[in-house]
Amino acid sequence: MSEDILKLIDQKFGSKVQIEEKSPTRAFVMVEKEALLDVARFLFQEHGARLCTASGVDTRWGVEILYHFSLDPINKIVSLKVLAEKPFLQVDSVGSFLPAANWIEREIHEMLGVEFLGHPDMRRLLLPDDWPEGEYPYRRT
Amino acid sequence: MSYTVPIGPYHPLLEEPEFFTLKVEGERVVDMDIRIGYNHRGIERLAQTKTWEQDTFLIERVCGICSTSHPIAYVNAVEDLLELEIPERAKYIRSIVGELERLHSHLLWVGLAGHFIGYNTVFMWAWKYREPILDVFERITGNRNHYAMMKIGGVRRDILKEDIPDFLAAMDELARQNEMLTKAVIDDPVLHARLKGVGVLSKKDAIEYAVLGPTARGSGYDIDVRRDSPYAAYDLVDWNVIVFPEGDVFAKAAVRLLENAESIKIIQQCLRCLQELPEGDFSVPVDQIPPGEGIGHGEAPRGEVFHYVRSDGSNYPIRHKIRAPTFQNLPSFKASCIGETVADVALITASIDPCYCCTERMIAVDADNGKKLLDGQDLIRLCQEKTERMRKRIKVST
Image 1 (tube, rainbow over the protein chains, first blue to last red):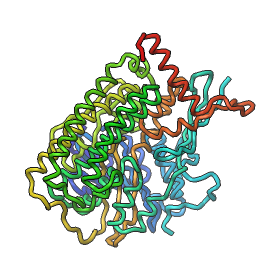
Image 2 (cartoon, rainbow over the protein chains, first blue to last red):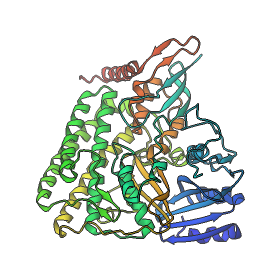
Image 3 (tube, chains in turn purple, brown):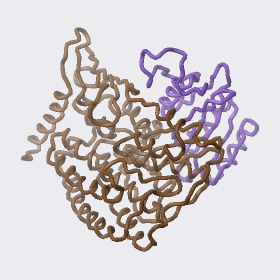
Image 4 (cartoon, chains in turn green, cyan):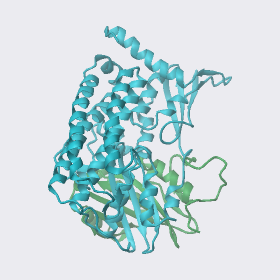
């Protein structure tokens, strides 16, 4: 476990990430879509980060997805921010290698209509079976 | 030949309903599937239509048992956004309310778990000892549940100096009772035989499923937000994180029972510190929430509660994400239930402390003709009979 995890991310992924250190315990890392899985793997497999959850936020440009990773021993939460742009709203699935992301990606899929490429099981989890296809309750428009 | 056992989805008793489908071969569970959402109330969306102040009380309604954990995580998130430091007195009061809640929640669980395996004495004891905690709650907050104590910038009510000796006496009495209960459970040979080695969740699975709270600590995964990311007064008092490496149902029960003693220690220290501090200084005013993002988490009785808020500078959050611990703990059944017997599944599902009512709704149906084989009552009976057989084998009288 490294204290300067943000420096390591910057060194390893360079131009694909943009780091914003909000406070000593919180950091947001804007990640290019194609580098998401690599950065997530780097955090989970090499630094033992725990995936707390993911949040989807509907914005003008698409759905912003934040994967919140907690590095418990150094008391830091690193949130990977990735944008699934309109109109396709597609992003690679972290759930493809990390079971902890399985349910939350299903939830974001149902609530905001993001398609997670490579997710092992995209069946409905929360919405009722007779909910109409293509309606997403957490969209802002 | 394999059968499908549907469990759920409606529970009249606790928390939210969920639906398990077990595929069984004889007594063994070979596969399982979980479906939730029957009680999805859209609180995240609703939170976006209420002001920051109102949300504190809306969030309290996420859960009836851990009703103060969500507000604590929410105010942590907003204070993280504001970069706000709260008064020391408020920190101690937050910890006291949080730990009282952990105590009543763990005792509730111990009682119900006792009932399911046929130890009704444990049920009677645990629920009897839980009652004085609710009385303390009523004196501090005015309510036995849904305390409405948290606010952005502090707490809403003070704890008065003249009440503190009574609360300390109640904690001393509870410490004695809890020690007796803990010894009775941990030293019981039948419980060892019944619970050890059942529903093992390995540390590797615990990490991959990112399970939380006693479920993680019972599998040797040493995480606790109170220590790792201190909030309220947890870094101002002396206490220990309880970890057991075995990963079985017994380890999870032991973690909860021993955690009770730690919670009592925390409350006693916080109350003594409150005696030293001047009364009245328990919140700071907050005028406006600036644009930005905040993340807050807290350790609920079942594990970490996680809140994310985003503000555009208006009176309402534009996004509020809530993640309760059971959302992370439930999928781990896929790792811990497979290969176990149907009589033990009721116990394993109970061991993460989700909702017991699901077991009451279990019906085993013959996959070929849809005929009912077992219902919830039968499953509890099966579970209790197995304990009885072990009791006879070990020659312990009841």
